[in-house]
Image (tube, helix red, strand yellow):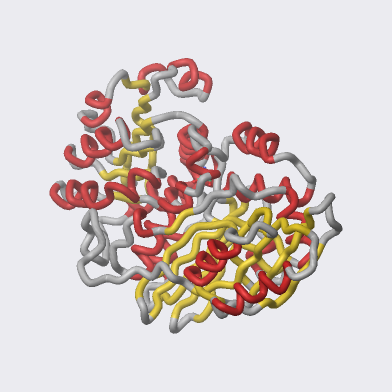
Length: 426
Ligand code: HSE
């Protein structure tokens, strides 16, 4: 039976889960995959952590050179995170001719061109299933399951932490801070949770996924990004009343005008399949020209779900001789001539605080009319003193029209504030 040695760089939440799966399932893989995979080395600054996981003393390496020069190591798993030492170590591994499996979306998103170059030079593989959507096999689905299709759109909940926070705020009225703390305790959040709640993590994932789906480089800098930090209990309550839930969505579309990529909170109709994706679960809804709609659903974060994706890559690398690289020209920037759409179409939820007096509504609707914005629904809440909250759901319009309309509305002193603007998906 073929023997394959693995090294794990970093034994945090995901590294620990990976170690556990690989060691506990060793015999299972011998039987089902006809390969004997053993963990030959781990690199972890916190020795106690490695010992507590059950790592034998002799496999705990003291530096990366010990790992990459170890002839028993064939595949190196990087679960350190970030783009500092992780980038150096992955390059060291590839330059030593070892295949790399990484869960590091920031690294892969920002440097896949560089990593792939090193991999090709050394005839090594670079695998990144765990970088996007945790345990959900989205990368392999795009590479090996849906490659018959022109993918026209992709819409997903791709961050477990923010989905967990929004779910807790919606269903239990938990405060944002409490829900975030719990997501951190459960090991879903990034080391710096701003990466999750400000939408960076989703942006990196959308850049990776849309590059694969649309067969062209979609740099993360082209992704429009908004996080969930401005979502209030008032918006969550209004969503519920109007028949929606709020989700942080990653949307990628291939249109006649160009590629549209955006990450932002959205009002999602309760009847939409993505509305019932809760807690740390993630889902991606993909449309292809041949297959029509496909939805993948599963845990987007956590030790074992992400470990599952890593180990599936390890098994793939261990059992496939041929190495596959990008289907597109993998460069740092987008290819010349590829257009990106920023004035995208959407419906909108707007919440504003206005002075409760005659003629205010007429002013608002005249601004909407000026920018060709049509109202689908409106709610006026009880006035709090002189100020009353007004809520609008618009029909589909353009991003620029809404922005211009809001600028115009802000000029009226009767409009005390435009409190919230959230895009709507029906
Ligand atoms: N922090 C990430 C999330 C981990 O919450 O989805 C998985 O990528």
